[in-house]
Each structure stands twice: as C-alpha cells, then as structure tokens.
Length: 139
Image (cartoon, rainbow, N blue to C red; front, side):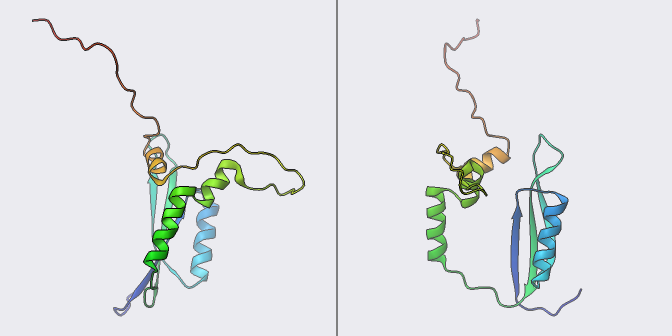
C-alpha cells in the first residue's frame, strides 16, 4: 500500500515462544487494534532449527508517543535489581490456580538481560580457566 509521507508509530512485540498459535494470536490481537504488520524477525539458536524468539513489527499512522525517559530508566533499574515479572514466573513464583495449596518455592535469582542474551547466543557456560604448568617448546 502506498501512503503519503507522514509520522508513523512503531510497535515491537517479542515472542519467547515461537509457534503457529503464538504468531496467530499476536497478529490478530495487534491488527485488531489498528496496527499494520511491518515484518517479522526470528532469532535462531545454533542447536535447533526452530526459532528461539520472534520479534513482530507493526506500524500505524500518527504521532509517536511521548516517552517518559526518567520513568523508563527507573523501571529498567528496578528490573535489573529484581528481575522481570516473566523471569519470576519462569522461576516458579506464580501462584497455583488452586489457591488453597501453598508450596514453598526456593529463591532462584532471575537472569539479567546480559545473562539471557549470553544463553541465547549459546554462551551459557563460561570458558574453563586453565591452571597449571605452561610447557615451553624444546630447542
């Protein structure tokens, strides 16, 4: 579709579970809200042929939203200290549907953004440090 030049708003949706249903739900949800699909980018993992993540890009006409930089920095700082709600859920902090059964879940420190990216890149195990004697070649 050809459109006259003008301001666009952009929306990026990150999917950590990439399957047909998740893609369909996301596309239907955001196009139903007036957003137009702009593209999809998949993040692959070397050990699998299935995408590890997907980023879905949407646009719509209109002025870009004004962002509260101070508020965004505060939220990022809080997330870096406490972890994201998604990480807490993944670590087992979600309450059971049956609220009458209470279980104690051990604390698992959520991953930082750096640790998550390292794992996605396949760098989840640090390189072993070599210790011992260094042998010099004989002359």
